[in-house]
Length: 350
Image (cartoon, rainbow, N blue to C red):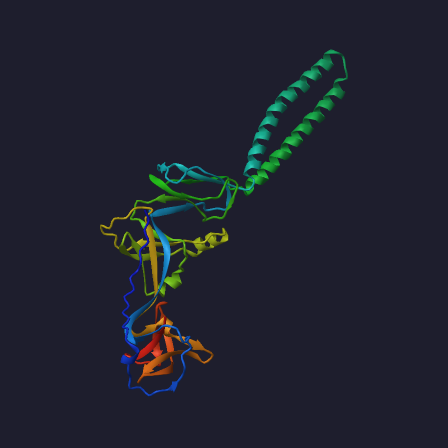
């Protein structure tokens, strides 16, 4: 059974009463609150905390696998295995053919049959000529007639042979993917028979026997990953540090050209003795920004109008509007870059 895990947000909000707050800063202007007269109003202090921007993505534990593809373009003849199948070294997993593969096969069969038929036909011509001779007929005329018939039959046969040779000049033949080792099939392409495949398109994936991997359907590019503060996964309550597995440019090109969205794949840095099972739910967590020990206030303490963002500070029992410059936010709290000092008491919209 899959379980999602919540990431604890270590944020401390100190609540105070309106009359208990004070500050020695210079007072700006006294501006009326924008809240309705009967709205419940709460206050908090500007405090220091760690703030990070986090994104969560659904993922899963999957077996570590190798993907196999054809090294030429062509049309899928068939995939001969299914996920979960046990395969052995040398087993044919899939086949690829050229555009004219079936035409070539049909022509080869047709030529073979014509050659067999011509042998019988020419024997009948020779017998017909002998009958004409025995009956005292015109041998010269009959001989010429039979010669013309044989030449026409041979000409038609040669045309088919020439066409076959021309088709074979650019034909890729029958190309196979063969299992390089004993394994279990992890996944196969959803492409059907006769589907066109570009070289490099993954067709079959085999379990390579290594430690399991983590994957999520949300694509994180290599450049975006390199800028992140951290990236890890939560599985069965365990935090697992991850190593990003990049795609090659050609792999990405093939995936995109086939109208697919690439998944993001990770190796687990140090699996140790954690209990993991293929198919387990994984929550992949991207920490995109992180700032330690910054001034911060609740996001819902911030107001905004045409002049910019501001808050209401409580000072000497008065409501004071303070313009602020804000930094990163974790959606619950936001960094204060300028405009407030630690310990200032502010309104929080309830």
